[in-house]
Figure 1 (cartoon, rainbow, N blue to C red):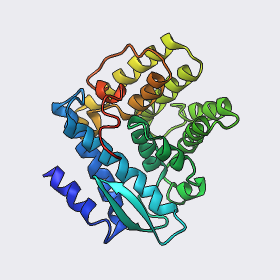
Figure 2: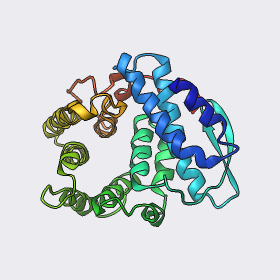
Figure 3: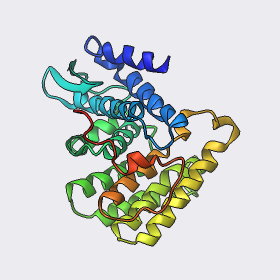
Figure 4: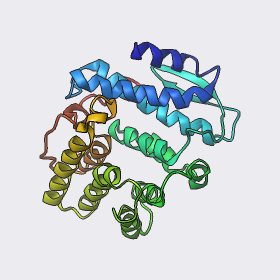
Length: 263
């Protein structure tokens, strides 16, 4: 049923590109749900679902930022002509971070670069419910990818913003949002042992967060997307990733499926 819903939404995008918000959410849910029965992402349909989620989430920003009337986006094995949308309710700092993580996991260098060129002003238009550390984290990731200046101070600003004394939801921030920042800090310092410890901690906090009774059955808990993305950076840079977990699909981490089909 989920697969059919995703396909129906995707097939309708050329008629109404503003359905990208719903398509993004449901495509990611499908990708994560695939890992319930395939936690290593070892079979083709799982990879296919992750690529589709990545393509949809990148398309959100392609059509929101284009200066043309339309843009061509490859989604679910087809090149689709989507109308420009400009800013939309779903074009937020949160959706950007998710799109970035998915592009990193799928090793889509051009898409990562395109995301890093999305104006911060666009993210702020619908970013009023997002704390300043979200923007600092986005700035950190963009600076790292594009080789910009002041990476360290930007990361410090992001980390400082997650201080449990100052945030509205210290559990979510402490268990989900801060851990990938700590992993990234260890990664850029080339602290391999510290990185693996930070990864282990991130996965433990992820498990604790999503094991809470009210969240147990949510697909978001099946894969630790943020730690996975930072671990992909580390893996590709030659850092030995020594932590294994059901929340860290090994075939995605080790890029086993990359190049399987045009994306």
